[in-house]
Amino acid sequence: MTSGSAGIPAELPSNRQKFGAGPLETVHAFWLTGMSCDGCSISVTGAQDPSLEDLLIGRIPGLPPVVLHHPVLDFECGEEFLKPFYLAAAGKLGAPYVIILEGSAMDDTLLPPGATFSALGSHEDQRTLDGRPGISMMEWIDRMAPGAAAAIAIGTCATWGGIPAARGNVTGSMGLMDYLGRDWRSAFGLPVINIPGCAPVGDNFTEIVALILHFLQGTGPLPEFDDLGRPRWQFRDTVHNRCTRGGYYEEGKFAKKADDPECLVKVGCWGPVVQCNIVERGAVRGHGGCMKSGGVCIGCTMPGFPDKFAPFYKAPPGASVTGAAATVVGGTNAFLRNFTMEAMKRTARWDAAGAVPSGWALDREGEGVRMKLMHRFYELLQSFGSNAVDSGRQQPQPVDPHHSGQARRLANLAARNSGSK
Image (cartoon, rainbow, N blue to C red; front, side, top):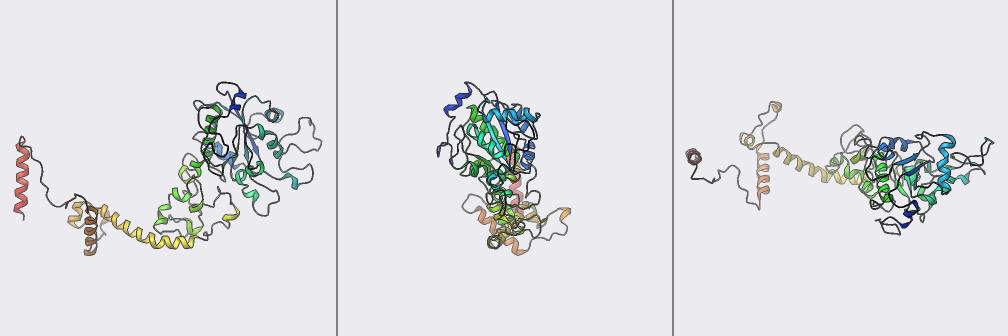
């Protein structure tokens, strides 16, 4: 899905002006928590490009600072913490704001009247602990979503439902997109933005926040999203496309146990069908990531997680078919590549001597007749159709008559060559 399609604005809509002309001074971010484990919060605190601190203090040129209202990271507590929530819900905040949901949305109608799965604060007219429930998280979303400049779901629970929405759950958990509906749009015309992962890559989140800030500021276009509301460049490729072990797959080399260095498909890795950039981007500062650390991909960024990827650590059904094909074709590829690599590991001098003068290769045998013939055939194929010639044949050299020393050296060289024949 590109910007400008399906009613999504390619440029800043006119209601940007309701916040006054000129650059935005601040943008508020309200962090709401549903059925979550706080793993997304931890992930974001480790982001580096940009970092959470860069966003909060306005260190990125051209972007306003973000005022983050987070139940764990905020300095304020109690009424002081909740005051901006009340103002935003009433449309009196006086600045644009973004709502961020960590953890799945839930269906409070499954509970007895007045009960809630998750709550934050209490109604403004309630100042005593009289046994009444607080404001449910779903009520906060209902009250704040209409005026939000954007709504971002972070983590697989908030995007698709995740583990709380697994089969047999009693909470009716779902993603923010499911809760708000297909036709929901923010005050700036944007559908729900999804950053999946369990936990997600922190930099994926802070990067999209920075780009959305550019959009709100009017200094950049709306980033490109796919049909599921994910940043297209972050979730275009599969894990397998970028995996450091992917080369083993195409050579038909597979791990038999978790600590083997080869491709992990046959021990339960779903990387070939999972869209995620953790191998390429790393978990923190470019380091870590499931396959880099020896773990298999269990599909945690995908809408079908966890049910469609269970049981974990068992080879996917298609692995036996694709693995067998990769073993046959890949085995041939591996042989040809090793054959070529061995040839490229030898200088012309070593080829002529028939041995490698390395003290580390004392047990290495010289090439047999069969391998010599194969390498010679390879050289002919390599130079076929080009003006390349036998590297062992002496080639004529240009002679500058004004440099008699050069001419004498070339003449002596020619005489030695003719005398040795």
